Image (cartoon, rainbow, N blue to C red; front, side, top):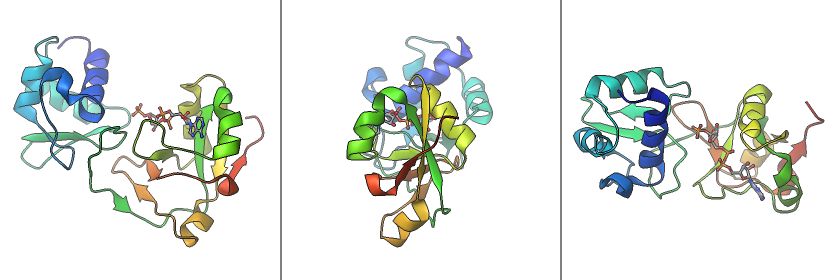
Length: 181
Ligand code: HQG
């Protein structure tokens, strides 16, 4: 296989954002045909079915799932294209966390958390994970989300099969910035 990390990132781009890049389409539930995906990736990288199985199995965030007979594959969450990955609606814990970069704080404090280019705002179950997500955007800042109260107020929460919590947006009133970590 070509560099595993690079191929894995490329697969995330294809399955979440730009399937047309390799000439494939996703169905309404976000599934891509595995043979088509492998053929498309092989235009620019080297990837076999065992390589793909290894990427799905070992991915650090369990980003991908096969269907039962491994003829289809999809990203579990993180899409910008409008697909319905059949997320499980669930009662959230009392608090969830969102890590971001310091540069976004002023805007978040005014507008709340917005999904930006993705379909949902991504929330973490613990502060440490949120901090890691925030670090992707520079100096990390972590917000505590009053998810229990939000749900009681009628906002829907979903949990992806890889444990990421998702909701459409978080109004300012449910946000509390944590003291620097
Ligand atoms: C910020 C990774 C200004 C938001 C991670 C975030 C995650 C605002 C950025 C997953 C805002 C969007 C998602 C507002 C939100 N004004 N900025 N009103 N509201 N933002 O990458 O949550 O490795 O789309 O705070 O682990 O960082 O890809 O979202 O900083 O689970 O699998 O806008 O991506 O997973 O950035 O990350 P992103 P995210 P993967």
